[in-house]
Image (cartoon, rainbow, N blue to C red; front, side, top):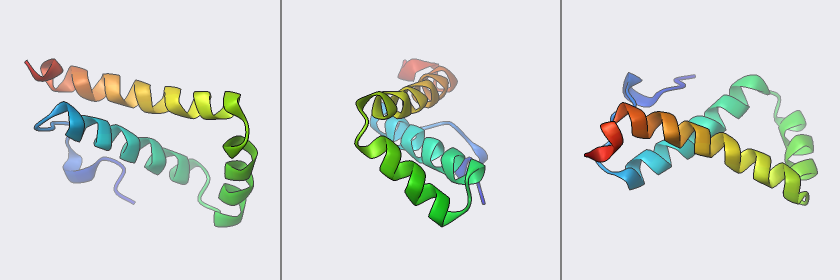
Length: 75
């Protein structure tokens, strides 16, 4: 499993960076829990739990902050 597509965090736009952040968060989740049955159980537990959803979005936000820094904040 390729965890960082094309082995780079460099993106043309913030939108591309946001998409990469989501992709990285998903790949990290799958890498930590590769069993599809367990993924479904976990997904069901947080899909209806506002706190779980907020925690998931925090992971994506952290990934995005890392990507933004790697791209010199697109300046």
